[in-house]
Length: 130
Length: 201
Image (tube, rainbow over all chains, first blue to last red; front, side, top):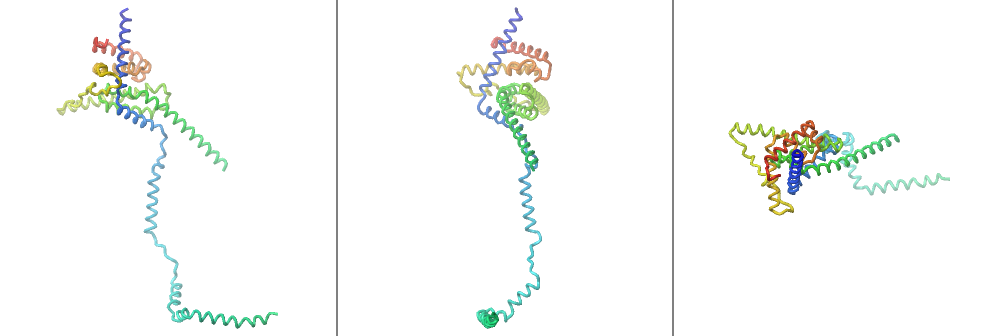
């Protein structure tokens, strides 16, 4: 009989303790609940598959590669135009020769001579026909 | 070419399935944490009497469960989670003992251990001030009494009473036999009733 009374009293005690505990849980303030919420999501992030390591470094590697390429292009061998010495010399000769300059000045005259010569040759060609 | 397309399609299906399973597992674990986190925080807080430290321990336990045991059946999560948390609490208490000894050696007492459960209790919600005060005082008395219990008795009482775990689950969480749980729990209840007296009967 006494044993049963003790068990009942223990149960009542445990029930009251549980009730007090639950009330203290209900009294948790909003800031604490917010912190718990953030902690929960941080823990859940552990479940998501992490990207391979190289993917994480890809942006940095891309920037580094672009920088290296830029440096190489900037400081590397300069692109030399293929201007061989004789070609440059001949161009200079043409530009500097007095005859050529005179020819350029009288370009219309020389065009007229060339046209005249062509006209002189044409009747001969027509006569040969037929 | 066709075999490449087929293998790509298969790999996409596998990835989709894995993604769905991850989302389902995440939702399930989210519900578990949401259900247990507030009680776990209060249990840790009552053990170590520092809310910020308790919060860190609960967060560590959550992360460890998610990282290492999320693949276990959901029924096993509660004892696993509390086992992790209890280990964290014990480690913290051991560190505190060492810290306090060092402080005493250097002539400084435990100056920051002036925890006041009533002052730390949050704002009331939906109760009259008298009722709230009475409830807070009752809980403060209970916390003081729990603080005087041996650690294993306190663990057994809190897991059985506050978390509502059965004897088997409590044994799994505490890492001991079911018989030990019954013994610890019974001694805890006797001690608490004797300490709290008629006010709590």
